[in-house]
Amino acid sequence: MPLRSCISKLKRDLPIFLVIVATFVVSGGVILLVAPSPSLIASASRETPLSFASVSKNISSAKWNTLSGGMPQLVGHRGEKAFMPEHSLGSYWQAALEGADYIEPDLGLTKDGHLVVNHNEYLGETTNIASIEPLAYLRTNKTWVDDTTGMNQTVTNEWFISDMTLEQVKMVRINQDAKYPWRPQHFNGFFSVLTFEEYLQTILNLTNALKRPFGVIPELKSPKLYNRGRVYDRYFEDRAILTMEHYGWANITRWINRELHADLNLQNISDAIAGLQRGPSAWQSFDLDTARYLAQHTDTPVVALVEKLPWAYTPKGLDQIAQFAKIVSSWKDVYLAGPAAYLQSSGISWDDSEIAKMGGFIRAKDLPREIHSRGMEMSPYTFYDSHQDMGYLCSDISSTAFCPRNRKEELFYFFELGVDYLFVENIVEASMLRLEYDNTLK
Ligand SMILES: *[C@@H]1O[C@H](CO)[C@@H](O)[C@H](O)[C@H]1NC(C)=O
Ligand SMILES: *[C@@H]1O[C@H](CO)[C@@H](O)[C@H](O)[C@H]1NC(C)=O
Ligand SMILES: *[C@@H]1O[C@H](CO)[C@@H](O)[C@H](O)[C@H]1NC(C)=O
Ligand SMILES: *[C@@H]1O[C@H](CO)[C@@H](O)[C@H](O)[C@H]1NC(C)=O
Ligand SMILES: *[C@@H]1O[C@H](CO)[C@@H](O)[C@H](O)[C@H]1NC(C)=O
Ligand SMILES: *[C@@H]1O[C@H](CO)[C@@H](O)[C@H](O)[C@H]1NC(C)=O
Image 1: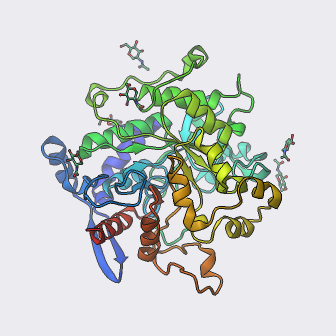
Image 2: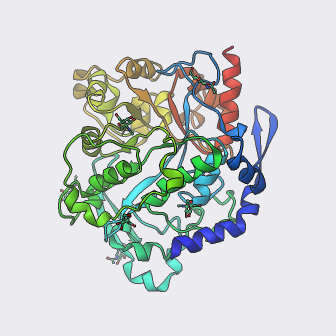
């Protein structure tokens, strides 16, 4: 079985995996992170909890500007993709060892109805699929709706998850995306693409090993593509909901046709992990119809991903989003450059009179107050590792306004604003900076 071979490979390489020494430059100083040895983990899981893994919302009594007043939560973006091939067993373990509060999976659906974890709807960028001869015939072009804009997009010469069986998906191995050559390449080829069930089991296994719960925050990618050709048009959403329910991360609040999903055949959860405390959960989707559906059918809070929707940054737009979402998420620069400048730079156009009717664009600095006052939280993305350009508009133009020059200035700006969740890479660095900021509040 592919998973078993992948796990035995991980076990063989666990010593190297855990002795990753990462150097992080934080505020001019150097912080060394040495991951614990396997024997420490083994003894810790039998006896006392690991102290490094206990950062929690209320570690200080200081009042943050978040909606809850507690520390903002760090979401490991695709696990820990700064160091490990994204969405792999290694990436999720690394995120947990670095103290992430939530660990993010992106969901897709195979042709034979298995939920799998991958960011893109296709596999060419992040796996070795191009070298697998028996899968060559699957390479094709596809057009579907880009959920971020509502416009059609075409991707050419790729291998699409929705065309493949689970057996075929399991033939490939995950690699670091070639766009990031500075990232460690050591684990390329080690890990298989995981099913959503394997992701959820991993979170429980991590809870068991590290004696702390982790939040799960699945994103449903391109539901209109994944629902194409299925027996009904919420097939993808319902399979995700039923799986989350089975593992204890969602309660179903409205009727779902379970009989149509009898073939899901969800695995029995072992006694060792069945009773473990579950961390919090949230759904994410750029498709707001899907986001609304998830909110109606479960009690799990929903993150509305609204990056390129001009109306979302107006008072009336936020009122509409607040009807179903508990968290609003957009590209981080919206909170610095402001909605209009960001949208313009992304080539998005809007009707000024429509925006004016909805109350006009909210200014960057007023967004947190406007969002919190509607009872919603904010989760901007993505806060990259320090090797990568931060990607702010202000770094390309000469501007007298504040522009972060390094990760400390960047994160401190967002901490001050009161963002509630941050999608981060190099999680330990973000975690150190969160503690440093926390100390300034005392
Ligand atoms: C957080 O607050 C709860 C309730 O006040 C308390 O029991 C717990 O020990 C606190 N945790 C930390 C890490 O301070
Ligand atoms: C996909 O698109 C490319 C570029 O437009 C084209 O050359 C190729 O023939 C197409 N492939 C298929 C399978 O249609
Ligand atoms: C997207 O493409 C489909 C068929 O390829 C078409 O029916 C639909 O109108 C297109 N949508 C947009 C927004 O262009
Ligand atoms: C979870 O842990 C159990 C027991 O060690 C193991 O059999 C299983 O393969 C693990 N699951 C995953 C997805 O790593
Ligand atoms: C599901 O409902 C139970 C009982 O009301 C509650 O304790 C639990 O927190 C809920 N789970 C989720 C994931 O919302
Ligand atoms: C789960 O356990 C039940 C009862 O022991 C068994 O009938 C069923 O086949 C098991 N399901 C799976 C997926 O193994």
